[in-house]
Length: 287
Image 1 (cartoon, one colour):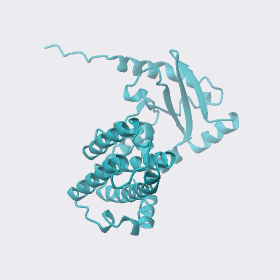
Image 2 (spheres, rainbow, N blue to C red; image 1 turned 180 degrees about the vertical axis):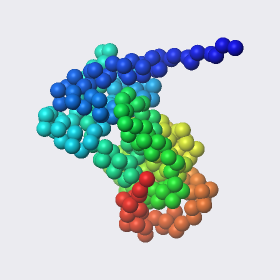
Image 3 (tube, rainbow, N blue to C red; image 1 turned 90 degrees about the horizontal axis):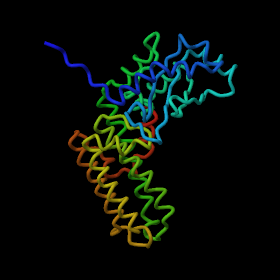
Image 4 (tube, one colour; image 1 turned 90 degrees about the vertical axis):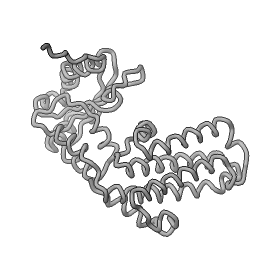
């Protein structure tokens, strides 16, 4: 019986080309050339997700020892190296392995989220694969609670900051607070579902892939429609303002989801009494 050959999609063909050709391009820089056989090289960002539209570039990490990073700094004014591969722009960022590990342990979720989808290009001693395995480790229940506490309380605070600007019709202040409120709501939903939140530009897309996050994204979409239809163009009592009503739905949905996860803490209601504790919890979070 013949085994079926794996299907080579456009993405897999592109990944193969990156693995074959990218090292020659990146290590052509004199400051990087001595590290060709030792540096860890990972592809991340949109290309590692299979996004290959005309706005997508190639994001590359180069991880080296602290001593090797000092050698790069001595030979180059920057750790940012631009290149083109097949007419497609890209850049490689050099960083020390010690710093990468510290960022993961300190819950840099942008990095952790990217690592979970990263593609290994070169990994001579397995350090890159170890970091990917560390990033893909399930989020501990205690960490979920700690970070949900932080993002939920921050969301409530920025939501409250919307009250007077909505009453006054102050669109600029509403937009500033609204974006931060929604960002914390999306992150609160994702960590409650055990998913590391990504950088802002991928946040709604990633949140839509989790159960609680999907509810927030749906309300987010309704808020965008309201804003597009001019909901912020006039002053209106915040109690009845349609944008605020959607934000209250988000809040209620997060509270319901927290209850399903066994979280019934006083700060779900009297959040304003726990701001300092919530921020300290966020700072002390460890992966």
